Length: 235
Length: 366
Image 1 (cartoon, each protein chain N blue to C red):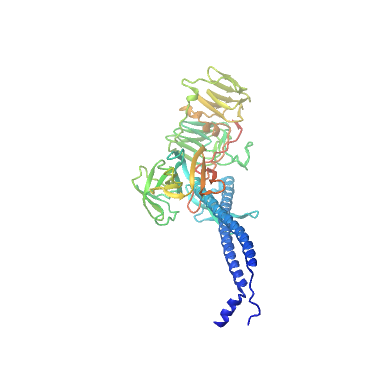
Image 2: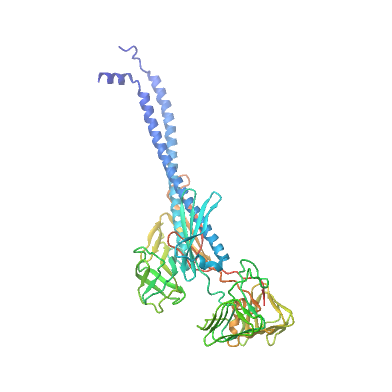
């Protein structure tokens, strides 16, 4: 039935196994090192993404800070910035009662503002007053306590919300933020340190350092990434 | 069954199966790596797009701001109730485009909305609320008491961002040369005496126009009193410690009485700095020239005599306000109309009041 059933000799098999083991050992090494590199690079990318996203968010918010922000120390020096984030602004259209402010040019969607939002009169009649917003319709704000001087159509108003960037503990590497009444929601992980500064009246400097989750096996240390931005406040 | 066992016994075709398995696992690894790369490329591309869109929209805001500053006198024509195009879609090389619309914001302000579009359809909107700065130049001559203009004195205004003021140029002259008293009469008399703007007398004051004097704008009596900003006169001490003669060229200055006088066409030049005088009197076509920032505190009165005269008898120290100095006094008080302030914010709800530094002409000739 079969012409030859000779197969391989032991010598042939030994040589084959030897060659194959050398080749597969090398292939395994290559696979191991590139998979390590992949994990490491993914860690680096994750760190950079976290840092950039956090920085992008902070720059966008701080650009709209109204007035001079307050920089304080919570865990590390100058790691907390508290500011009034401008949400809207305009001139009142007039016809206000002692607890309302109308702007018929607006169409505020429902639930745009809560009591954590403040409406302040910047110029015109009633300038210098600020009240929290207790309710609103699409064109009218109701304030929590009566105006001393009700605003009229010359009143320029702004709506702001108190916000802050901070950290709560030196041991966790989470950058947190506060908006209105909410407490310290996480914004970004892997941020080991951050500092705010005010080089002059209109600018805010932000420096943050992120760190990879895992140790780089080659150097035995975590990799770090530092970003610096300067924000020009618009208001 | 019989056929299958024969195949395995012969081991023919095993190389194909092994090869296929190896290729499949390699392909899986390759696809995974490619996928990761593509995701990260997308992240980077989105970041770039959003930044590019933001800067395009920002360019639109700056374009609109400059345009509106240069067309300050026509703001009312842009103040429609719905958003109307202000700047048509503008292509910036191959970076993308921006389009700007404008809408009435009430109170004389304009709501400007700039949309930046990148070639790959990212779209960023910035809204800014531009409003005229009301505090800067309410009037060419402001006084807490009476104002007297006579013998051919004129007040006028011009936009220093368009051109300088060279004598009377109807192309650059404006209509903001207002004269305003807080509580006192405004007396205008004599041929050629002209207020190129409004004459508004506050409190119990009235506007008295006689002998060929004209007011191009409206004349109002009994307007509400003005609130003059407080002036810090502490640099001059109390009683006033008048300036030494350093930095004062030309004219006649008495260091003990603090009186600065120039007559018969003389030119007094003040070097940059702060001065404390009791009085300044310019007569006979004289000129007071400042070429850089000069702040003058007047402890007594300011008077210009050559038939034209601006005197502020009641609260002379108000004249120490540098703004007052720059905006008033003279044959041709030079004014820039209120330069709008600009502010902006990103995304769907954002505007900002706020202020930019205003530009001042270098030279003031009185």
